[in-house]
Structures are given as C-alpha cells and as structure tokens.
Amino acid sequence: MPPKGLGLAPRLRYLAGRARRIDVGSVIERAKEASVSHHKWMPAVLVDMLWQAGFRNVGFQDYIDYDFAILNRAERATYMTHPVSNQLSQKYDHPDYRHIFQDKVEFDQVFSEHLHRDWMIVEHGNADALRAFAERLGTIVTKEPVGQAGTGVHRYHAADVADWDTFHADLLSRGELLVEEVIVQHAALAAVCPGTVNTTRVTAFFDGEKAHILAVAQKFGRGAVSDQMTFGGFYTMLDDDGRAIGAGYDSHGHVYENHPDSGVRIADFQLPMMDEVRAFIDRVARVVPQVQYVGWDIVVTPTGPVLVEGNWGAGVYENKPSVTGIRTGHKARYRAAIGF
Figure 1 (cartoon, one colour):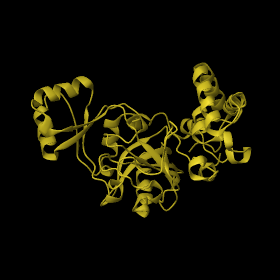
Figure 2 (cartoon, rainbow, N blue to C red):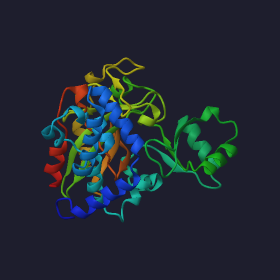
Figure 3 (cartoon, rainbow, N blue to C red):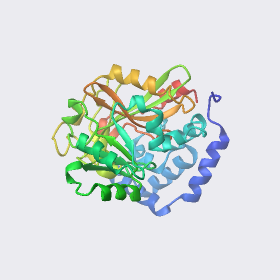
Figure 4 (cartoon, rainbow, N blue to C red):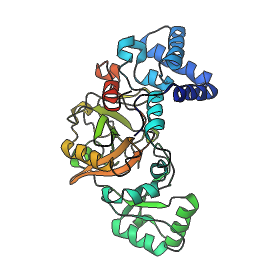
C-alpha cells in the first residue's frame, strides 16, 4: 500500500494544471453567484475564491456548492474538496488497474457477481441475441463503454423496435455496446422517483483489511434514464443510519425541499438496508484492492444492494450549509481512514 499522507509534488502538478486551464470568465460568474446568494461584496468573494483555490485546495465549484462565502476558516477546513479528492485518487488508485473502472464493459465483466442483473455485449452478428434479450426483459438500458455524468446511457423498450437488424446496427454505430437489464429499486426509492433508478453514492477507502465508508449521498432523478445533474437530478447527504440530513440540492443553485414530481419531502427519506449496504461495500472493495479510493454507485433493491459502477476518481459529495444548517463536512472521516 502507498505511504500515508499527500505529497507536495502531486499538489503542485495539480495546481499547475488548473492554472493552465482556468476560465477567468467562469470564475467571475461564480463569484457573482456567491455574492448574490450570500449578500457579500463580489470583489471580496472573487479574491477569497482565488486564495482558497491557490492555497487551500478548494475548487471554484466547491466554494459555491459548499457555501464557503458564509463559513469561517475552521468550518471550511472540515470540508472535503475536489482537489484533495483528486490527489487521493492519484495516490491510492493504482494506474495499472484504473482501466477496469473506466470501461463499463470491463467493469461488468470483473464485478459481474455483484451486479445481480443480466447484461450482454452488442457485437457484429448478434442481432438475434439482442432481440431475444430485449424482448425477454421488455425494457433495456444501453451504455457506451466510456462515459461519465450519465452521458452515453440510454433506455429502450422492445415494443418500440420495428427492425432489430437496424436497431442492432444503430447501437453498434453509436458505440452503445453494453446492454443491461433495468434495475428494480426498493419501494422506498421508487416512492420518491419511480421513473428513474435512484442511485446511492458511497465514497469509501479500502485500507487492505477494511472498507471505510467516508460519505454517503442519495441521488434522485426526474424520470430520465439517469439521476445525474445533467438529466435534472439532485442529491442529499445521508447520515450513518441512511437518513437524509436535509433537503436536496444540485450544483446549479436549486434546492428541493420536496421532489418536484412526486412531492415527497426529501428530508424524510430513509435509505433501507443500511447494514446490508455497509457489508456490500466491504465486499466489492475487495475485488480490485489495488484501487483503494472509490465512489461506488449502488442501488438498494427489494432483495438488497446491487452495483451500478465504481468511480476511481471518486469526486466529492458534501453537505450544503445554507440548505441543512450544518456547517461542517466530512474531511475528518477521510483523514481518520486514510491518514493524510
């Protein structure tokens, strides 16, 4: 296992890369957004954002999402941020094994026993197999092998397909090569949004003996094939017992006291089977132990958790103080488990 702590060199490389890619106009727009939301003087917010980015490992969007404009220095220090998460990924996710998590087909092959659903690969000459698979299931989900934030994910109904040879050829041409059975989610999740399979993001670190759960976020969709924000989705953080700590929110300034479609109050949500979820994460973390820091996307079904995917670049889901009233984040949990 890699030595504990985060080295200076990876941080400097990350900062140099960010400096080369900085979009000044976007940063100014974010500063204006924070200024309006929290009634702060925009130039002061802008300077603070730049200082936090350069010297405190705080991403510009982190600053907005986690309401840094209203937090003091001690409170800010409790938040996990994307630059720090990136450094953890680079250090604890071995580059020789990351490809397993980047390619959805390879991921399904390696983690097949933990998917708990049927799947197949679209190849030349298997249009009849595709038809049999889809007609047996009724509805299928197709995925491009490489994609993120829900891109490349599609949903089709077998009854809508008139020509299976053409449908098969179209999937091949678009690169929608992975075909999966639709997950049937637990009634507690379907009550909030029945039209989307609502995933739970469990960020965890495997130390070689145990998987430490660092943060849990519950994502909710709006009826589309994906619950990602690009499809109108949002999330809420869960406590250790799987209870929502407040309303839902996204990175576009929207707050959801209730789900816009079902009307269910988000703060009342309780993820079922938390003991099973913890045990499940410990099992999947052992499959590729060389990739220690992972954001696992799972779905709780009537019979237990199933795996959707694992993200070696785990990303960050955190508490939003202006929504929950809680002014601390999860960084202490990361430090306790990882030791940086």
